[in-house]
Length: 336
Image (tube, rainbow, N blue to C red; front, side, top):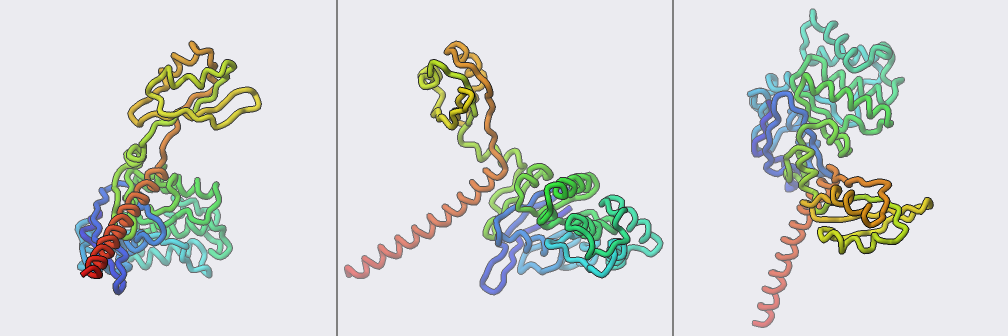
């Protein structure tokens, strides 16, 4: 469906996107993640044909977007960030205008416009001026403009930015529905959103792709330790001896002394060890009453931060190494 091959984008001496490659399969929902200035929007603008890559290829449904732009672009619906709309038009007029721009046949235009109005939940406001709509409805109008013409690929750049929690939930549900009929690329800085909606995640940092995987696999890759949150009643203070009873425990930390007499601990083990069954067996024997026991989970945010920090540290290490070499060479020259 979408093939990005060795794509680079330069602005003068600045490299915004640095030799990236990835594929997006037909019907897949893919999240595009990265910190500010990572190259997300630049990449999306190149995929839509809005800007030209300095080098490399972008192929949409077999059509190179640089060589056959009209054929490639007809398969793309794009919802840019910041909702650029014509505020003097009604919602229906704007969507109709987008249908005209996309060369939807005149005899099909009315039906297509009504269809996307229904899909995006705009029936009640379709005849209202866009300037009078809430932020959430403006997002829906922008999305309807991307959907009209029934493109195979939908590209959404920060679709929930600036929305309240209820509006965010509504837009997320809408995106999930879109994923049943279209290939979707979603850019977002809300990692929980990507984790809930997307089947696969592409993480970019400083113009380079640093990871491509499912949210589940990325979360697992961030797991270095297993942590269990444990709330107990321990009148004899036997939790202090628990590490002697269970050798696999790396650390026990008291995190909260509750008013009802219970205590909350965090028990840490290696990533490969799950102590829940053993704790249920041993704690009653030690006269420790379990009130709550749950395994703390890693998130996509944990994976994201770990990957960004790893690449940052690797770059810093390389830079420092070069500085040391230069300093050593300088000292040698001075001795001579």
